[in-house]
Image (tube, rainbow, N blue to C red; front, side, top):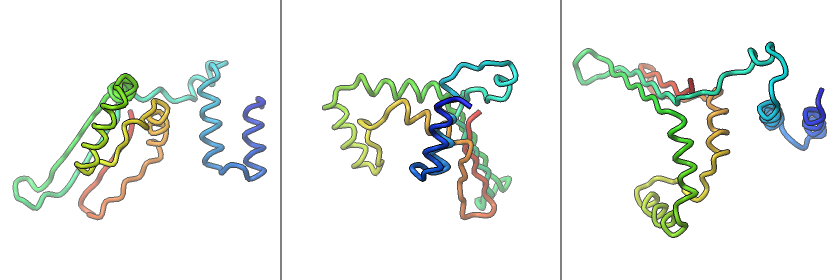
Length: 143
């Protein structure tokens, strides 16, 4: 067991961090370390390339009786957009934030950081979307 993993487990045992936090820290440590064996490389997941949102819903408006929405967004586009916000002057970000808030979008562009996007992508494996309609299925995942 390497030193960083041992320290994380000690913090967990002492109650300084939760089990979820320990798992995320261990995953981050494993990502930073180069793969040492072909067996370890086969265990690790490939880095996702797309964010997918798929919605299947029964449609009461007639027609064939169902609707399907399938959105596939390249994660590289999202990563580039987050990096581009660092190039925008603070005054422009303030004005953009004000317009977003006026439109009802609660996003603060000054708080967007590349690591936040990576954390989001990591958490999508465990994402559950609740839908109040039994005839509708929503899936959000990375591939």
